[in-house]
Length: 335
Image (cartoon, rainbow, N blue to C red; front, top):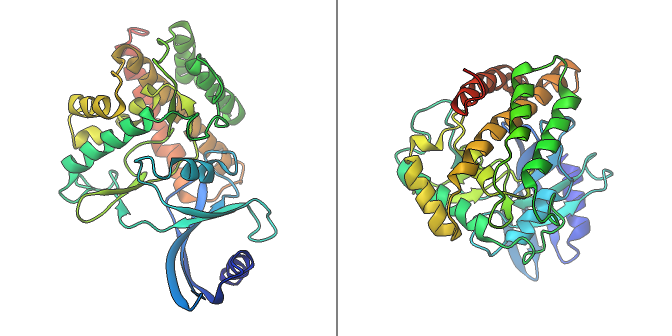
């Protein structure tokens, strides 16, 4: 694969000479795309250049099936708009090079915190990370998707009804992956349709998976990159907030929720609609169940042998079904 990657880069950099690619290593953990780190060295106009880079390639089977150029397109559009993201270089949709579509981006400094294995995933910087986490999410919600050329994202031309569009999407995904009828999830879907949330003040760029584990932080306690944009779309910004505070990946462990919401409001310039947030919390648990159902189906069918995917279906699926029951009681749908 290193040899093929070198051939690809060389063919797209005609001014480079003495190109070498080494250290190609798979980074495990993600379950929607394959991620590899590598080093590229070359000479250009008499100057020696070395770059640490990331290769993101379509997975043979993953939890989320996104448009092939979506993440690359979002990174390009958001560059220079106050969101910490890696620079991107090449997008390749032709499978002749590396068997499946891929793109190449910078390797950003830092590492992800893992809330599942330690109570202090940010090494003493939890409060500072929490403040940045909410401010960055607010800045994202403030960006006009039309001004940065993201009308082509899902729902990009919709004027409203985002709740219905997203509910339809995830119910379809559930229909495709559900091997056994899920009464808790199906009951939640019915309640969500009967009790729609208020429309947002304005549409926003929704990351779709904005949570602990999907950003990098440095030893100094700075968030250096927001990653994993495969589920990015246009919608209600309350969707990102609800997903971020889901108890399976609790950012509120590091900063109280109310303080986080205030920081979001300051950065976004909009108020948090708390009446809508309750609806989106229940929606987020349904969405999570649809993802874990996809994981179960991909492992059961033999499409995936990834342990991360298998454990997602087992551990996370059980968690969110129980969480749905708690939320249904909270909204008065069940006694």
